[in-house]
Image (tube, rainbow, N blue to C red; front, side):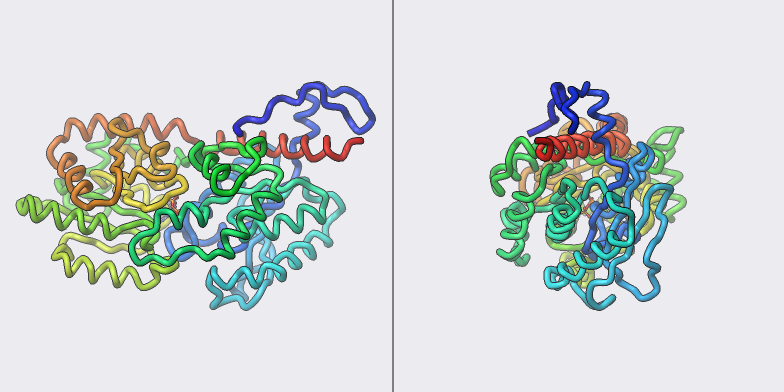
Length: 451
Ligand code: UDP
């Protein structure tokens, strides 16, 4: 597990001993086929199946292209209006593949369409020069299956990122949430066995790959996701001035306590825990009602498709509808203003592979209250840039919120620390580390083939 050792002593196909620098050059891919079957990098994140993985793929691809690695992202055509190819950025192409009806297919229907998708990718490849792709990088287990087939057919290595894992999700299900099916668990295990390299977001996720899926530790590398620091930044005049300005732009009261929720509305993200915590806080401190606003930014997703309504009903039942603002998903520039305006971001998820929203909010100078699950203890420095809460008892979240209401000096300290912590993440670093994983995968793959 971890970083791959340097390639001293490696031989070329002609039998010459290669130095490490020469190796790296030889083993840096020129063009990568990236696979994202179930969700497109062109979709608006924060609703449906579009979330952190979409942001991850777009940002990684752009930064890889800047390093000289061209990226072609294959995704399923979901509308007749989509052209076969869209240039997302210089060196980054999105290619639409027909696989099943354009509209009306849910993610759960896609395993039956994977054959058609793999066929479409292979056809697209057949139209290119031989050796067009040096490596396949698949995201999420559905793409992993297509990756397995295409990488083998093209004689190139497969690098895979799970993003989420069924066994981990099932271990942390919200009450009443549907468990991930056994077919997904089996499918993930097959992809783990087939991949030449696996990329995990955190050490914890790497451990889960080993523990739950029996991954080969020598094939697992940890690469932290990043944050776009040119988009998510604190106001130069300081967090307080920035908060006032952002509140005015969003039409929010200047002096309110604003705990913000950002993300897809689904049981796994537990927005209900925040609403219950708010209800509890107001029970204990009714005086806060006058200065409390709780924005919930995001759209319905998966089994949460009926949830926005469900969540609105819950807010009404809890008697907090007057303080909760439901807002549809927004572009990231607008989202940066919601982060700046907030007193604290609340991420009460039951399971979270990393939690990009937590780092984005911190980059804007906003501390985070997060559940102590998955990658969130890496994304948030407990007691420094925010607060980690074990479990999902609303009373504990209410207590954490109360502290933000009472102690502005502590909030200001956390805000500064949050900016510093977020700056330790960046997509350029993610891309550089990913390129190293590619190099290791190519090196291992070619070594294998050199007699
Ligand atoms: N997001 C967005 N607009 C919204 C809500 C969310 O662009 O209205 C983005 C957000 O900036 C973040 C991503 O969606 O980059 C969510 O990623 P995260 O890792 O927090 O959750 P995931 O969706 O992967 O479960």
